[in-house]
Length: 216
Image (cartoon, rainbow, N blue to C red):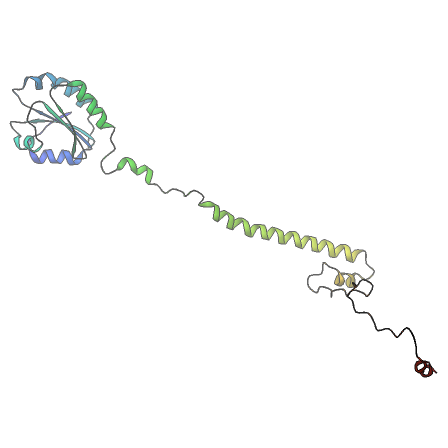
């Protein structure tokens, strides 16, 4: 049944709490405008009613006066639209276009309890969050690659030095590619020394008579 006739306050509270949108039609049997708009309300109820989602209720103000007074109903017909048990819009009088528009607006509202926003609560990613991790993975790989390349160059260098040398073992030891026992640094000769290099002492350019006597 699309339209629910409210028989008690407990039934009314149960419908309010179990549905996202509730359209309440407060009417009276002696109300002419209520009878005129009743077919339109029934069509809307058949079209939009959904179990535990959208409910259309008819409340007789004479039989359920407590409910009518609780919601401030003073004229019939009065339509009150509830969302999440809270009244969000009231339409007084038999106005089908206004009632239809109000119901369509209410149906677009999210489910109570924020259910419509639940799909946006899935774990997300921080912008740039993956970059530090990728950098930490790429850096060891780069160092590892450089180490392999350096070892290959050293191996080829030692191989070529020993291949064309008379004494391969000695040549390999003295090679610049020897990493285990590198050769001692080469001492520069006096010729390659700069102007500040210490020169060996020289004798006097001119000799005295005493020097000549000593030479004998």
